[in-house]
Image (cartoon, rainbow, N blue to C red; front, top):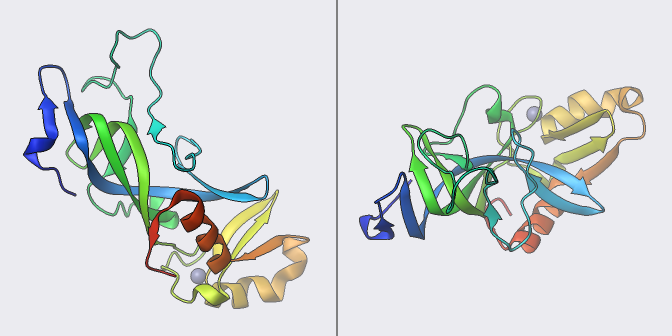
Length: 191
Ligand SMILES: [Zn+2]
């Protein structure tokens, strides 16, 4: 989204080194982990730690300082726009800070370090529309079904077909969001 030139302190090697973070978009999934709510990347599956920077996995066979180069695929991925392709648009939209070695691509970035800045919108898993009525929307969790349902889809798809879902756990979206905001110290204007 933004990158001031003064951020760049070293461009002698492949990629640019950023001290001040850039801000870009990323999609997330929610996971109930040992009773607490965590965010993870839908594609790579990395769990994002609380209040600690996520560091890109570095191939141990590469030479230091890291192998985030234009020719590699290493780095924490983020996008310049809201990333609305069919697969990813069903997941939570957030923004992240990225810094360290960064490779800029046409539509996004690969970075060495990142941390979550905000949650911008939460799409319903069925209709994919951003949830507005967070007090009547739910996160559903069972071994066979993990989904977020808006109030409309919850009423039509879940309430009248409980036998299909069995003993599924149901959590109000507001409580989940409040937990994430507290644990990560992030911004969320949906609350
Ligand atoms: Zn819906």
